[in-house]
Length: 212
Image 1 (spheres, rainbow, N blue to C red):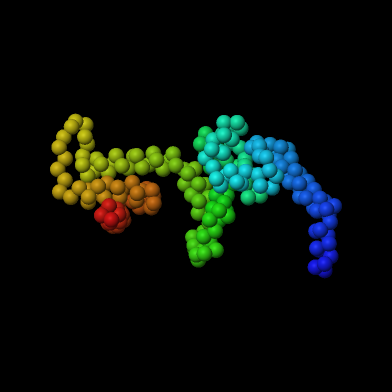
Image 2 (cartoon, helix red, strand yellow):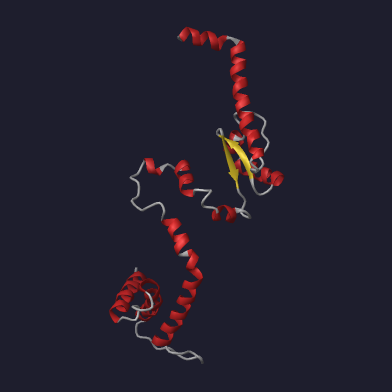
């Protein structure tokens, strides 16, 4: 078997055929990108190597020149893979499309810490839950926060229609009591947040965080 392989590799026609197959596969892969309406691939001289050498030796200049020629978003052929560079003007579009781009999986590929350390027990869907259930109600939450912050300030400091000197014995505790009201309102709701024991619990937590 070893002799057959050596004979095949030693034949110039077989070598040419293998190299031709590799080049055809690369060209097919790269030509398919234009049909998918993907970012332009920056020009490179050497097949297979692509932009790898320049990316390692002079990455900053490579990205600068490619950006000047192809715009904010373009692709490089590095280590046998297509690497897409996104400029600061279009980063927000990528961040919004979390259904198409998985940053968690991207980090795992680039920095495989999950293979070194024990995987975290925190569910991976937390970021999606926060986006769908909290970010969607952000306007409503902000209005409630503003309303309750004003209420808390009026309760502990008083109305400040005109400039006045505020005498507070313990500024940290007063600040914690003010913070506790809007936080309790958001977490436990309008019906329960006025409970004295609940407010004391949130005040203690706020005070502990402030003193950290």
